[in-house]
Image (tube, rainbow, N blue to C red; front, side):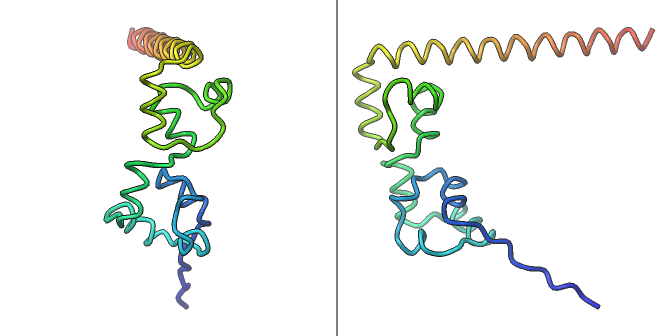
Length: 135
């Protein structure tokens, strides 16, 4: 007896998240259907014009906006950015360098520095323990 393998599908919101695009800006046909794993792979491998345009000019979802600005998603919220932004709007913010953005970038840099320090400390501890076991 053979088992029938079902096609894995996802909601448009999940597919949009995996593609790094803002769902409300996608075509209606994308928003209204379901996306199979094969369709998602095809979209990633050979993005249609609408997907290339969204990735290039936006509007971009908050995780993408945060990454482009070098801040956290929470930092965006603290800065009053609650909606999707276009690439042009992101570039304008980078040029204006508002106080909140500078503060959040500094905070993010500290977070990354601390994460790197903790990773190094963990590695050193593992190296010491490994050396102790060999003796």
